[in-house]
Length: 121
Ligand SMILES: N[C@@H](CCC(=O)N[C@@H](CS)C(=O)NCC(=O)O)C(=O)O
Image (tube, rainbow, N blue to C red; front, side, top):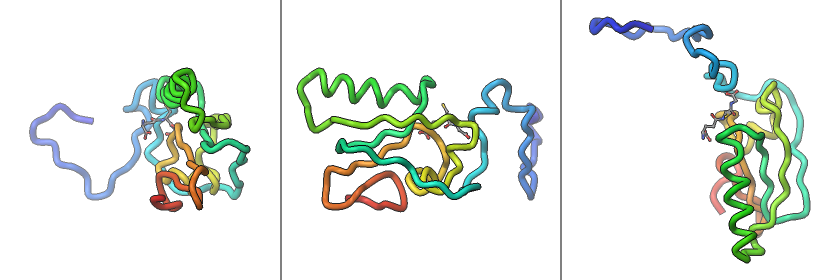
């Protein structure tokens, strides 16, 4: 990284792991599956795949507040995705190609819908 106003972006980008500080390890600029593994699916309408990071807990808070307010359609199963490689399994990449938690799938309709190859409902 450079503060120089004459900075010219490189023709081929390379990942400088050192430049990302302490968050570089949890926000990797890589994509695509590195292993084959399906995600578990529970019995509730929504399937949440997440972890207790600041980004990860937001969806859980939303679901809990909806349920507290009486929206029973917001029932969900929460599955732990530890981001030490589980975000790069084929099942997870299928619902979120950028391999970031949180991700979720809505099973309340005719077919599952999520944020990617599952397509809109
Ligand atoms: N809210 C953004 C960002 C989520 C995010 O940065 N998640 C981090 C953890 S808090 C993550 O999954 N990192 C895994 C990785 O980069 O390999 C999104 O949903 O795309």
